Every structure is written in C-alpha cells, then in structure tokens.
Image (cartoon, rainbow, N blue to C red; front, side, top):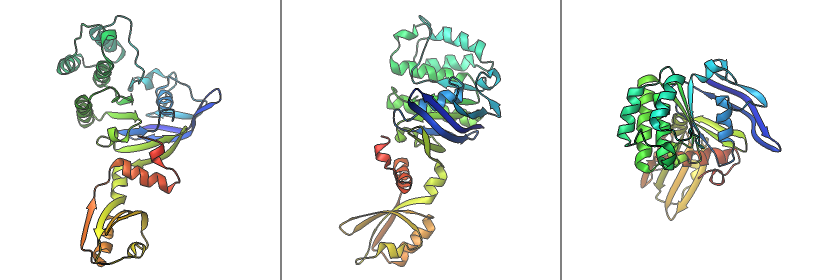
Length: 300
C-alpha cells in the first residue's frame, strides 16, 4: 500500500502540492487526473522519492521513500519526459536493468520487443516519441516491480498501441498483482482500466473515489411521461443532480440505486424509460459540481 499524508511541495512562489492525502491500495489501478500544471508529475516524483516533500509523509509498504533503496526496489517509474543514455540501444537498457532490478525478465523483454516490432540494436535516440514510450512500458513491465508509476504514459501512442499497453497492464495485474499508478490529463484514457480515480486540482486532491462505487451510486435515466410531471416530486428524498428536458424527453442524472430509481419512475407510469450507462467524465462532472467545481474547465 502507498500512503501519502498531507504532502506539500513548493517551487519558489508556486505551490505544486498543497496538503495532498491519498491512499493507493495494492492490486488496484489508481488513475490520477488533472490539467497540466495541476501537480500530477510533482506528486508522482514525490511518491518515487525523486523529490523530497517540504511537508507531510509518503510511505510505500510502510517504508519512507526518500533516499530509501529498499522502498525504491518496489517500483518502476515511467516519466513523461524520458531520459536515455547517449547512444544506448534497447539491448543496452536490458542489460542495465538486469543489474538494477533483481526480478527483471529478460526473456519477456525480448518477446515484447519483437511483438512491438522494435529493434533492440537500434539507437534509442533515433526512436520516435511513441516508440520511446513503448520501450519505457516494456522496461517497466519486465522490471517485475510491485508498483508501476506512469506519467502521461499513453501520450504519444496511437489508439492500437494504447489498447496493447492496457492489455499488458491487465495481464500483469491479473497474474502477479502489479499496481499501476497512472497520471493523465484525459479521463477517457483511464475509463476502461482504472479502479480508483483521484482528481488533482491546484496542488490538492479535489476528489478521490472508487470508480465501481461511483458507477453504482450515480445513474442517468431518460424518460417520457404522459403529461407534465414534477420531477422533484417523483424523486423526493433522492439526490437529484441534473435534469435536462428536450421536448417531452427528460434526461435525469440522480444519485441512488438503480432499483430505487426505477421504482420511482415506474410509479409515475411513463410512456418510455431507460437507464443509460454513465461515462467516467459524466460521473466526475456530477461529483465535482456538487462540491462547487466545473470539471469541464479542469480536464479534457
């Protein structure tokens, strides 16, 4: 488990992290979303022990991270701004990481390099941005660490490669319980892989929720009634988040169980009703509006 408590980090007059508290459980995919400049990269670098926090604590499996070799053996970090040794090849990188990470799987590395059609003998500085990202993911997966920190990992990958990387992550999670922590500015990239989402805004965690629980607690329903209907009266006692009406069609976003919502609608004897799936973006819009923020201004 990774536990951050009241983390703070400031660069001159810029407060990059402001009392950030978060818990990342083992075996979960934790998605960290927010605009550029929200503090995502700083948060991950503090979690990795690259940066020392000005205040607060961060522990991985109960160990302080900063300048702690034992704690750092537990994770691999894929940065947004990647660095490779001058004139190094993927083969050189493989030999280097075999020394650094005791569990590095060289055979798997060779297999994945072949599957991604990347030449192990070619100099990495001649790779495209997307190819470098693919190489980083392969190294991260083959390192065999318990945790994998990913900063904008999907940025620069085409749609096919994004799905391939997500499939590899899913396999690692299933087979050995790897815990990825993925920072992104785009909710849509995280929707089909994350179990838990944290929204970082202006250096602080605005919202941190289990995605499954969120999907169970918020629903969108479309319905048509025989006559003008008082929607607030139908759903009295429930948390009515949003009501849109176009002609006779109501689109309602509401908090509650699907059974309870369906029962209320059926009692009003609608001509038509249907519960629709909510996207992660719609869920977050609803959740953040409740606490006074417009998420559409915060993220893509």
